[in-house]
Length: 575
Figure: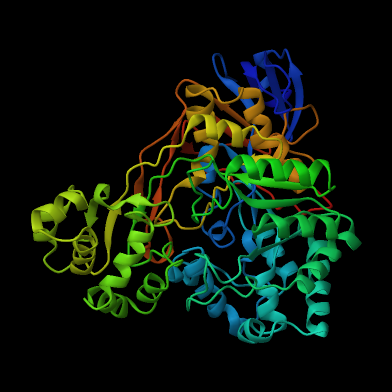
């Protein structure tokens, strides 16, 4: 009988603790790292030849929206393809618990817009065998998983559950209602929640809106509410907060809670995250983060955007122009209503004015409209064959010039002809390597914001770990591999209170990746029709990962899933 379940031989070990790399073997038994050193291959039931490969801890993906996807995709892909072995759900205040049966559809409607998760997919794919947050965690616990899952406690469902979403938007919460929500946060924490989350973006400049175009119920949280929720964590004495909002609100929460907070988001100047947020020049933001942490005693981490953007825009679902009222209004309603609005010549001037305000760009990332390409037109569209022959593969600039139209008219006319089910592909927005280095290596930066499980028809930012290791570290040398793995694993694990993972050490959970640093890369974007109810999503798979191991079991070999489901629910405070 073999001594170990897996022996990883002759790899270059980067342990995630910024220890200088070294060559050695890793032995795994019963889901734990049993030995790091020299191990005879004959002692392993499975032997992985890691010669010329990096052996490193699995990636901890702090910012995901797999709250529904995990029920039909055990490996939480895209993240699971890109070296991620643990994910945190419940971000931005959005989630599905607590929720009464009569509020389920309303809750899914919100997620269908603010995180662009297909509504019919959620309806078909979620078991809804819970009402309370502890019951939701129990459902996650018994669901087969290929990655580990830990959850924040999102505030939006609490407002719906206790106050009523429409009432809360108009009147906020009474003292009694606020006390009850705070009590439920405590109950959720006792069940294993790792802190609470919220989007606090106000009403201006917000692209993460409710299904009806109004701000989310948490967007206009008062200081009274923010302080009350913060003091719950102070009383409990553990947990981390995650918010999308202003840096000063993040500082307030950190001071009042006495606990760390993960703030969204720090982005290189001149670039944006997937929600178009880059509100401060990055060096000023970094200086303020240092001041908060070093002088004011507010422990504020920053999710750092380090992924180059390339998107696909499908106007049937696209909501990342919601910052502009004309675009938000046009993209609300049924498909037939949206087609009518985008067809209306009377609406076009206001839509064009928004484009002008973006300097001729489109979307949160300000893609150049003339460079956007018609990637595909649905075969279900009227006259699909003629439309495909005339437009597919051409840029909007080429089409507008050929037809003598304004750029936006050309784009919208094609979209309407295709019943809005047309894929417009953007060019890649590159980032200045020096700016990315300044952001990525700043003291409080946690590279990520994968948004895995959200905006799946538009962006593929869940490839962030591969992007950092391959593009920024290998190709541009913005930091060492030792620092990169610390920032991808041990540092985020520490920030969110995940104590048994994030580094390679004897006795720790065996979440391990083995990869070829020269071959590592994200593959081209593709559409997969693998969501419930026949829905599709835009993805980028990975190459170069020889093995991805979760709790001592191999989940992927050279990009191919083994169908192993060793993932666990990680209950904060007990895991």
